[in-house]
Image 1 (spheres, rainbow, N blue to C red):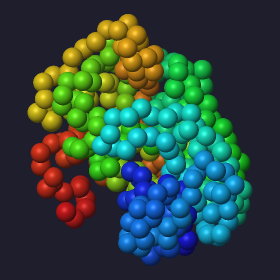
Image 2: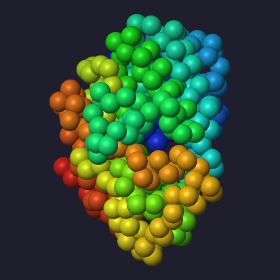
Image 3: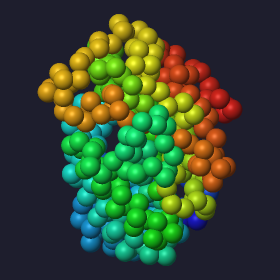
Image 4: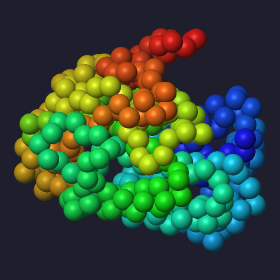
Length: 315
């Protein structure tokens, strides 16, 4: 099978390419940078240097590749080791215009697109399935991202493809890893519990995200939540992460102050965000997360020991 990964050097794209190659697939991967193209070539991936915001160039790249499957992993998020602001407008363009360009360039290929599990409208239920409405009128970047995902998922669905709504990533190459920007922020006491901390976060180890994507190469349609079994309030996961990092307990900050200094989005994430159920992904893909709880996953990825084996896999 020939697989075209749009965004092959990201947190999911790079390990996904490795798994695809191990399974005997041919892999073509995009990047904007020449140095990363060399890295992809060394890995065994056929690199394509393209600005993914140039829709015509991206469509042409997909057309030349003639893939069986296209995996859309494009975002404009800062690298894991940096603390720069996310470019939500650019990410929205990549998700909407980039996906449409890929569908135009490879109309006969199966499309698998990166979506996000934690953008549903809060309605009092602690955990949502995929039928819950996206929070398209949410505050700030929450609404921006939800509207983009709504359009992208509709386009992918019409083409018979699958949108994988990943949870918050942790593990190598992500912000929530020993060398990631968010882990450093927790260790330094710069990330507080917002208000009552009852916003529920749905997590997924990046290896589990890759495993679900591999399982989706030939099955599944619509949208599926790819996250672990334990959506957790911020008031629960953040102190645990701080303990694992050997840091002091996180401060608790009033919502009014967070709203004023960091914006309404963080108030939503900290106090109102619903969790996500992974039941449909398990049933549709035959996928079971190797890390069913962020608790054990954090101990591995945020703690001092890197020698622990992934459950059910050789070390």
